[in-house]
Length: 318
Image 1 (cartoon, rainbow, N blue to C red):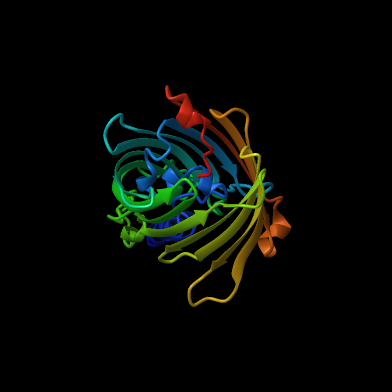
Image 2: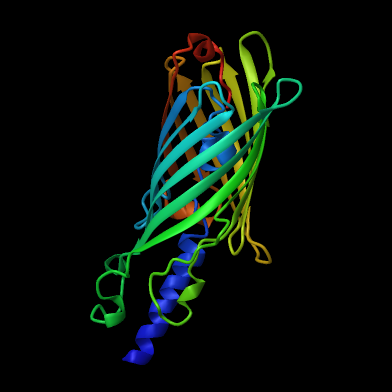
C-alpha cells in the first residue's frame, strides 16, 4: 500500500521533530549547577577543571518517557583568558534517540567592578535515529516501519555571552544556530524534521541573610519555535556556603494555544568537600500530565580539580 507508507512515515518524523524534539535540548531543573549546557560562555568560569555528571528521568511510570544523561567538562587555560569545554550527552524520548558531543571555546574579558564578560561558541555533532520497533503499530508488517530509520549525523552550532562575578550572573545564548535537518529519510515532507533554534536568558544573584545563610534567586526564560515558551523562577537558601535547599516554579505556555504546563520543583545540593558536590531535584506536575506519572527525578555529581587551594576554598555559588 504505497499510498499509505509515505504519508505515515512522514507524519511520524514530523511529529517527532515538533513533539519529542520540541524540548530538543533536554531541560534540567538544576541548570544553575550546570550552566555550560545552556551557555557556552560559562566555560572556564570556575577557574578549575570542573565536571558535572547528570541523569534525568522524566514522567516516571509512563512508557517511553524522556531520559537523559550528560557529562560536562570545562576548564580555564592557565595565564590566558580562555576557557575550553566538552559535553557528551545521551537523550531518548520514545522512539527518538540522540547522542551528541559538543566542543566549546570561550574568551573572558575582565571589566570594571570585578565583573567579567565571556563570549562562547560551541560546535555540535549529533547522532540521531528512530526505532520503529518501539512504536505501537496497527499493522506491524507495514514496510514503512520495518527496521529503523536511517541513522543520521547532524552538525550544528551555538553561541552565548555570560556576564558574571562571584555573586551575580547574566547570560544570553542561542543553540542550534544552523537549524540543521535530521536527514533520516527522503519521504515527502520529511524536511520539516530538524533542530529549531533555542533562545535562553538566565540570571541570578546571591544576597547574604546573616553570617551563615545566603539567598540565591534565579530566573530562566527559554523560547523555541513550535514549542512552549518556558519561564522558571527558583529560590535557594545556602547554609554555611555548602548546603543548598530551594524550590522553583516552572510554567510553559504554548504560543497561540490555550493551557499551560506548570510544575513545582524541589532542589538540594550539598558540597561534600570544596572539590565534590552532589545534587538532587524533583519535578511535580500541576497539569493533567501529573495524573499519569510520578514526577521527574534528576541527580547530579560535580567536581572541581585545581592545584590552587585558595581558589577551591572560595565559595562557588554558580
